[in-house]
Length: 316
Image 1 (cartoon, helix red, strand yellow):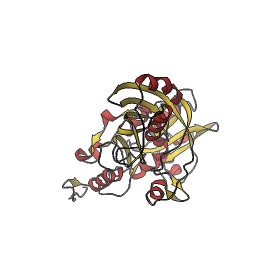
Image 2 (cartoon, rainbow, N blue to C red):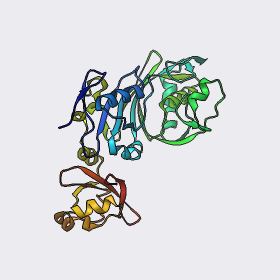
Image 3 (cartoon, one colour):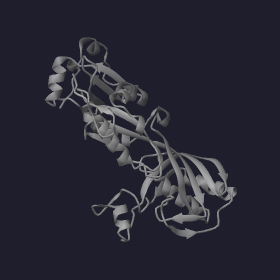
Image 4 (spheres, rainbow, N blue to C red):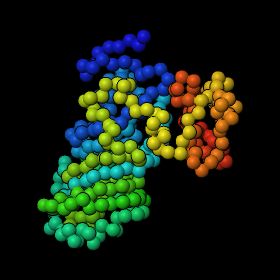
């Protein structure tokens, strides 16, 4: 029986369940940092092995996907997913942080809706974007926001990002509401600044909500204060099946042993029914998800260089 104890959140907590860890879809509220939200989850789970797959600014809210235990190895797979946001961009001034918490650095007359509509198409597709000075990007071994707050001039390198879709939802009292579907690495604060400049105005992000990460919606997330532990973990089977292009197969005892030793995957590692049915590559299968007889995820395989190779090996 797992020993439980009450932590300083006032919630009964327990160690992570045997077998690997979990996926958590968390709704971060504005005014709370991503690391404060992460800290509460660690206390509830009674473990330090919880990681994020992309933070949100303190003023922002929305979907945070957290990984626990061995599933933290899936970080890169999730950070590569597209993001969707709804943003309220306020015209008329620009702040040093490009959000409502910063100091005003420039002012200009707000543009008309027609002026915004005439430039918005410039920001769709592959574009070059300069991240905010107040960001977590590393510059010479230090976070850019640390350098900016110390008063040092920060030269931010531009990066190539993709805006898959950008939709105007409304414009009232100098506030533009946008829906944005974008690639990883996109800064909505920079997008607001650049739209303002293109309109011969100034702008910053007043409100920001991350509504989706890949195919996963904020609607499925649990509030930080309501998280109660493993019962709120998102099913790994459902996670991968929703990503698409996945098949779940069962390992035999030989496969578990060989994979623990780091031996490359072979068809013989699968249970007999799976061996008989598997097609080692087709257009519909990008990932193979390997579980043991108890249903615990043991590996994720990705097809590359002509064969399935370990993307994540949880046996080792």
